[in-house]
Image 1 (cartoon, rainbow, N blue to C red):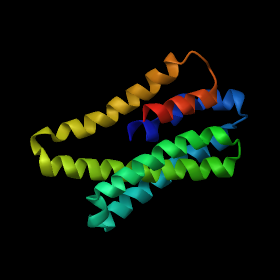
Image 2: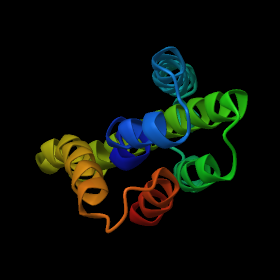
Image 3: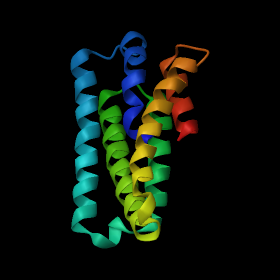
Image 4: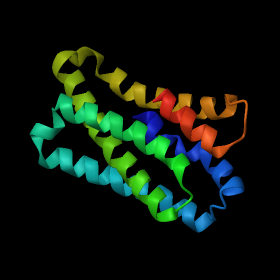
Length: 147
């Protein structure tokens, strides 16, 4: 979930330089991700069943990976907005379900659920820096693989 939600930031300079992404469009993509995350958080708050659904978590994980891979297949801003909104929504679902599951099964290790997000953020940045190429598409493919 940390990769799906946060990898956009280290890939952004590559997209700006190579895919013609403007500062305004970059801001719109970030906002789409946040709006999606908010939507996922609200959906899991309003639906306790969703907030505890292992199936929803699995589907959301697939959606995260698919949305990152799909970022490579277009340079259309509308498509990117949809993909980042999807990634944000799915990231929220994964986070809520994972934390709920952790709190129910291993409450003494609750902090690890939050630490995992930080690990995803760090892994995302390290992965982009470690790539043998500075290609934005390669970075999205690598992120999908990492997730």
